[in-house]
Length: 316
Image 1 (cartoon, rainbow, N blue to C red):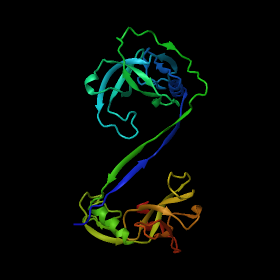
Image 2 (cartoon, rainbow, N blue to C red; image 1 turned 135 degrees about the vertical axis):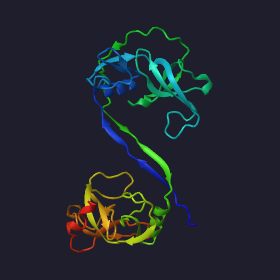
Image 3 (cartoon, rainbow, N blue to C red; image 1 turned 45 degrees about the vertical axis):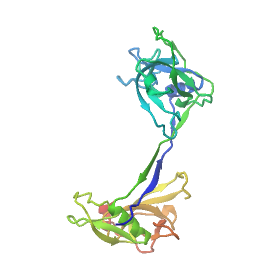
Image 4 (tube, rainbow, N blue to C red; image 1 turned 30 degrees about the vertical axis):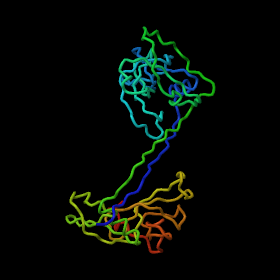
């Protein structure tokens, strides 16, 4: 029985976006300990505010200030906080309808245990000590002993602040441990020996690289191993102009789909050894291995004449 392969993988993409006037005012307001909502055409106050009415899709921009106190409408207890969550001790996820608002804001409640949390409990904002214009300027909510009174009419707000927040970076990250199955394990083991191995479908007879253990066309299991390549043909490509974090490759560079000789599915890899603006469809390439690597570092031109389009058009 071969060893079961596994490896930690991280998928991370920090998304940078600009803010419109409503979102800019909301986040800048949090920095200044002010909670803003927006009033819809039918008089409802939405917190957090949005730029378009969710019912009518009309643009809305009438900002109002609501209170930093509110009522829990629903909740769920989190006994084991994860990395980068707002609190490092057990807490409750809560939906809080702030006084003066008609919708609820999702955040966390700092409470000693689930037995003290209930729907209808009163809470208030605990502001972060250092505020930058982000939802984390609300460090959390905390229990608040007051009884709910009759909410007053939210006061109109012009949304004007000095040094407004105009953009944010939203981190998106997924950490997991990946274990390949039988087919991919054989593929990875072959790569360590500088060979490329796919699997042939017993029905349509196509060879798939990398193999998945089943034919994506016929849906039947595959187990016949076929060695392909190592040379192949560029079927299509793109020029990368943005440098990726922790990737020591200078831009611009080319990432391409490559149909290895004998394969019926193109795999993707970086093209090197040629100026980026000379890469083209039909270019014949071969793998370049670095010392100690378990997979090709990149593919380079072989010097052969370009492949005829008809030989790879089904793989574009």
